[in-house]
Length: 430
Ligand code: MN
Image (cartoon, rainbow, N blue to C red; front, side, top):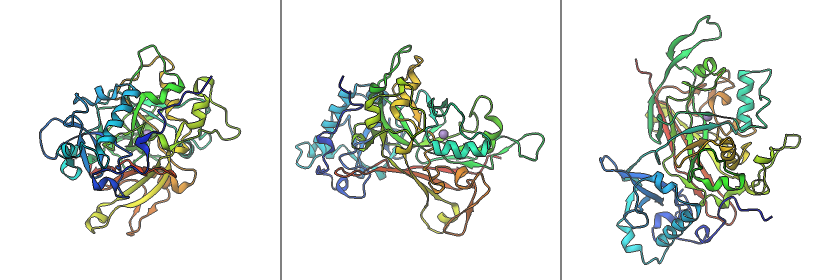
């Protein structure tokens, strides 16, 4: 039997030679060339208007309803359409934005500068599940929490996850107060309630679901990726001192649900098609159970997405200095694929719905300096990081701003990026 492709394959919308009549979309440095076309919700900055659905193109946002390509203002409704309909919509947007398109005069009036708009969380997030697919993160963090048994025996069999909280997810630009929580130091006999002093970020990708599955039905591995709509960056802010005290036996709770930040533009599965990679298992590791294994997933289940974390402290801001990069990693190193996460999530009949968010788990590379959290970079707070301006960090300080970035490159294809996912820590409420 022929292998079904996990998503629609490469087509004319991916052609590296495509150029837009919008000059900023042709700049080498843009995250949003005509080959990307990510979806988000925007409105004029400072206005009280309803959010509109648009795609990012160069330094502008195109209002899709204004140009007559969609009839809805409800992103979740749009995300529920079939993969085929999505492909058609992408084709129409691409054609209209191409150099020489007869739509240029009409569509120019439906553009708003990204510098003049504000973004919402991309859709209504019904449910949020955070996975744990970064094996280097899981191993390093496991060592800190359980030196004798860093990687629990289920890790290489089960795509581990927990149900998170959707209500506190915000969009890039989010600022939040340092959370209070119950913590107990190693030399304290009883816990107390206080501001977290081990506040951390987590470098993750978020996968937004498109078409869902009915309750009681599961999604097979080769259909799974077509149920995803697109990906964003996700910062799963974490209070490590709260986490250490509360996490057993039921997993993360208040250490994780005070704030999470996503980037505003959903990079679609179609745009990511050129950046798929083979899924492999290290020699000696167990092979996935049959429901999590297929030739298609092995051939192209992974995604080559380069990830970065940047930190700007209050002192850097005061001195007019830009952020400093702390680490780099790649989603291609994840232990489980997007398709495996979706199939596993639904194997018991759990229904995923349009707009649900799946976190990838912290994506750390195999080298210590590629870690996607401060917990790892500072060896559990024991080795402070030295910053270029002379400051040090073990965990986040008040005023710190963290920006996640991602982009994809592949020979023969145009580079695409995700835009920024930025958030800032404010002092605890007193
Ligand atoms: Mn996480």
